[in-house]
Image 1 (tube, helix red, strand yellow):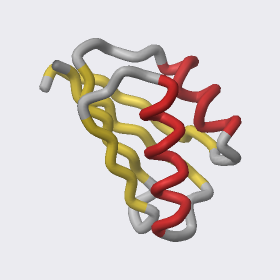
Image 2 (cartoon, helix red, strand yellow):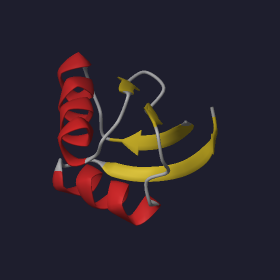
Image 3 (tube, rainbow, N blue to C red):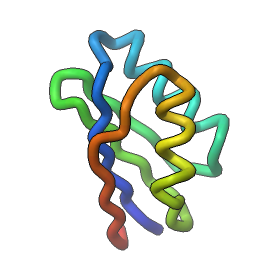
Length: 74
């Protein structure tokens, strides 16, 4: 299990959080995904690591910007 912490720029409200969460959930096999527009962050729990470039593409297509990425064993 891995924990991936993202910085995501452009989320302004709970609706934006839901949009990011939904797009990540659709694109990747994840256990959970939680976004917070107040801290501009998204935390993903998944069985395996997901490449930063792949996540950046999904975030970008959703209309937001990936500003940071870290992955660690959960």
